[in-house]
Image (cartoon, rainbow, N blue to C red):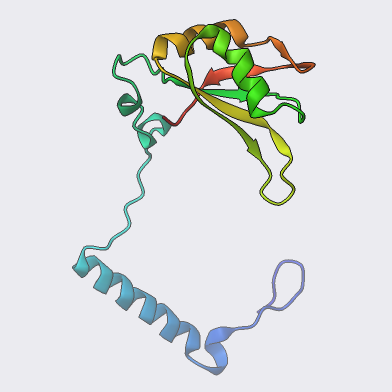
Length: 144
């Protein structure tokens, strides 16, 4: 069968009924799936509804006690990060994310505070500050 550019595409229905049989099988499978209740219904889901953020916060403000810290120097370790953030409240845990095989820092980490108020104060005060020669970005973590 000729196309607009002059190339020829194979005609699956001319030599065999393979195209028709494949189409028939697909229709039969779709009918069977509908009877089973397996129909796929495409619907637009608002992005905010994909994640339940109300469970992360008891006050409903969207705040958590876990902070994301980005823009870290590759030389920044967990001790330096804890020292910098412990000035703003009681730090429960600190994690600098490292590459699994090389062990080098990926340039970001997480700091967890004992309360949401301390975390909010630390996020406000530390965002944009210099740590180990780099301006860091501090935001509330998406996951609790």
